[in-house]
Length: 174
Image (cartoon, rainbow, N blue to C red; front, side, top):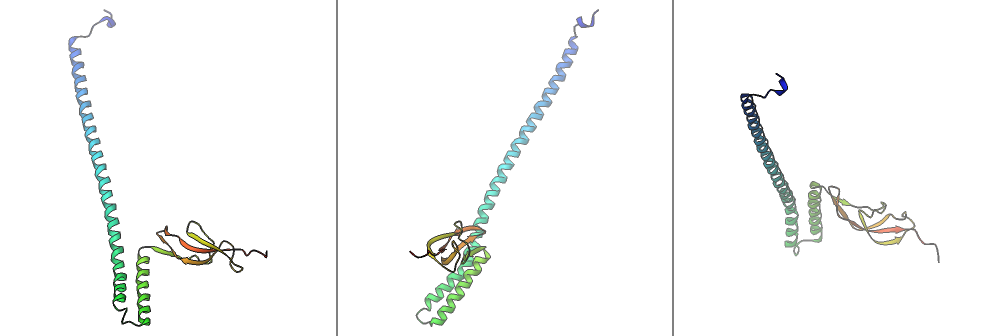
C-alpha cells in the first residue's frame, strides 16, 4: 500500500478537531484577555488625563488665590491711606505710598513678575513699544532715551511692553 493513498482514520480527524477546538478556545480566551487589558488601559489613560486636568485647574486656582492674598496687604494699605487722607500730612501720605509700593513690589517678586526698565538699552520691539522718536546727540541711535511706562514680564512672558521714547541721530542743518 502506498502511504500517500492511505486515508486518515476518523479518529485522527476527531483528534485534530479536538486539538483545533482547544487552540481556538485558547486563542479566544487570549483575545478576550487582551481586549479586557486594552479597555482597562484606555480607562486608566482617561482617568489620568482627567486627573491631570483637575490638577492643572486646581494649581491655577491656587496660584491665583496666593497672588490675590498677597494683594490684600496692598489693598489694606491703600484703604488706610484713603481713610486718613483728610487728616494725614503730605509726609505721612508719601511714606504710606512708599510702603504700599514696597508691598506691591514684594508681591510681584514673589510671583516672578519683573519690571522692564530699558533706559539706555537698544530698542527691542518684542519688549518695547515706541511712542515717539526724539533726536539726541548724547544717546546712541535706536536706543531707549526715556521710559514713559514700565513694562512687565511674568516668568519671561511679556505682560505689557515698556512704552518708550527712542533716540535717533540728530539731523545736520537744513
